[in-house]
Length: 92
Image (tube, rainbow, N blue to C red; front, side):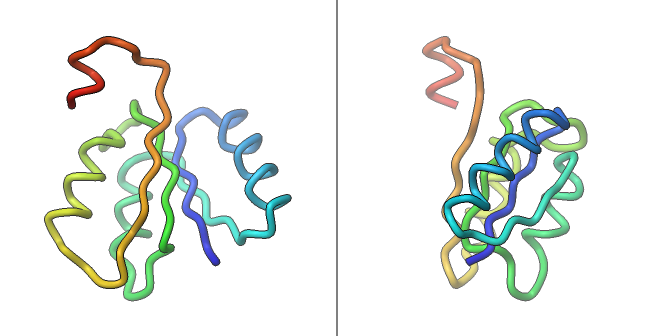
């Protein structure tokens, strides 16, 4: 199974890639929200996406909204990574 990892921090991206590959998944990388959206818009996008909350060109929550608005099949599972901790951020 392919997993998209989108994070603008290179070190975080590489650490995540290493872990996900060790678990036996194929990894597709994106450096920003634009690249992530292009990958998620492909005819057969990865069924799982690990997105950084804060990225240039589109944030993780923005990408999540876009994916959900398209209601594509098969379903895309999304994990948002963040160091944000306020109640408002969690609600978003």
